[in-house]
Amino acid sequence: MRPHRKSKSSRWITATAIAPIAATLLVAGPATGAPGLPGTGSSGSNTKVVVIGLDGTMYKKIVEAKAPNLLALSEQGTLAQSSIAPHTTISGPSWATVLTGVWDTKHGIKNNNFDATPFAKYPTVFTQLETAKPELTTESIATWGPIATIAGSGDPHADVNIATAAQPDDPDESKIDAATADASAAAIAKDAPDFLFTHLDQVDEAGHSHGGASREYLDAVTRVDQQVGKIVAAVDARAAANPKEKWQIIVTADHGHRPTGGHGGQSADETANFVIARGSSFKPGAKTKNSLVDITPTAVALLGVPASKDFDGTSMINAD
Image 1 (cartoon, helix red, strand yellow):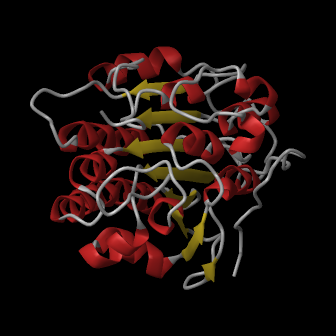
Image 2 (cartoon, one colour; image 1 turned 30 degrees about the vertical axis):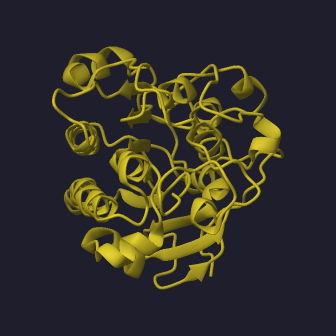
């Protein structure tokens, strides 16, 4: 039994119903007739932020796999590599940190069994954005079901909150990740949300099943890179067709994997973390020590929302 393996049982909104559900759940759309404000979805600089979460992925394996899309993003933008020790290297604590900007020592989540309670004191990026600027549109589309607990917590919460439905005959999770990436690309093209978080899980599955040093792990990195490329292509196409929109892409992971598989400890492989940030707000070629705790502070800064006094992280804008 895998002690830190994530449950796939929490599926809120299925990808097969995205079109009608998105229409019914989009309760806070772009404001019309509002004054020009930096970062709003309807006017001003029209900044758009896409955060791609790659579960269980180590940057050194992206390099080893020669993953073209992720390496291109790294070259075009800012690359951060660091250790998240002594933070808990489990998905629940880490994705909560990504989406709140505070460490597990504050939000208190230590495993994958959690509810919305911690996010009342430490609001998610969705709640922070929606509270400060209700005209912003925010979406979460994720392979791992508990992301929907995070995105759906608080009031207000994410406008659209989708947990992709499990796919038949999908032991390596490549099909469910493809569905998540397809839904994310479609949302970018159609909705152009001001903030989109998407999560892909198959690299973590390969790490658990075969180990971080395995050929199967590298193959999963290659496959997930293709899905990242699909999302990036949607961003670039949308940006080309709508030059006033300033699209920023951020990629990160929640933890790494031991060579033999698994995580939850404090080894170098388990605590290894990376952030890739590409867009006009980030310096191409810059190398920093930022980590997953800096994602929410960066997102709110990009969208013109003041930083929370509780943040443990800092903005990566123009970091070098």
